[in-house]
Length: 148
Image (tube, rainbow, N blue to C red; front, top):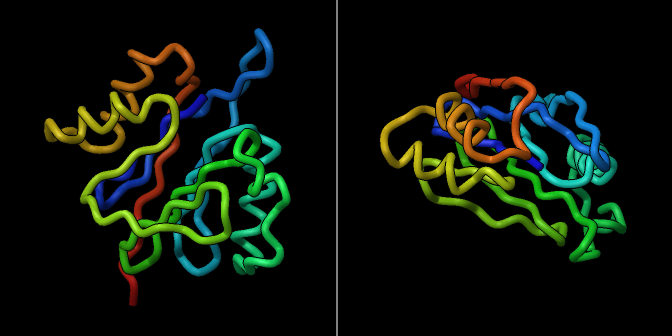
C-alpha cells in the first residue's frame, strides 16, 4: 500500500512495499528527463511498467495491457514542470487535478486531511504512515524545480 502526497512544491512518498506477509523498501517517486515528477501506487510490477511507459513518451497505443484491467492497474500522479498535476488510472488518458494539494494510495485520506490543516507533504506522509499500517519504511521527497 502507498501514500504519495503533493503540496504544490514537494512530492513525498512512503517506501513500504508488501508481498504476502513480508514488507520491503522501494522508491515510489521519480524525476523524469523533462523535469516532471511521477509517483506510482499499486502492484510494484505494474508500477514499473507504468513508469517505463511514461518515460517512453506516453503513447496511447503502447500503454501496458495491465492498465486496461480495472483490477491490475497502477495509479500514477505526474507533476509537470509547470506545476500541473495529472492522474493516470486505467486508461492512457489522464485527468488534470486542479486542487492545490493531492494524494494517492491507501493513506491518501489521512494525508489530504493533514495538508488541509496546513501541513506540508512530508508531514502529511508522516501522518499517513502513523495511521495506515500499510504505509511506512521511510520517506522519499522530490521538489519541483522551476521551469526555465
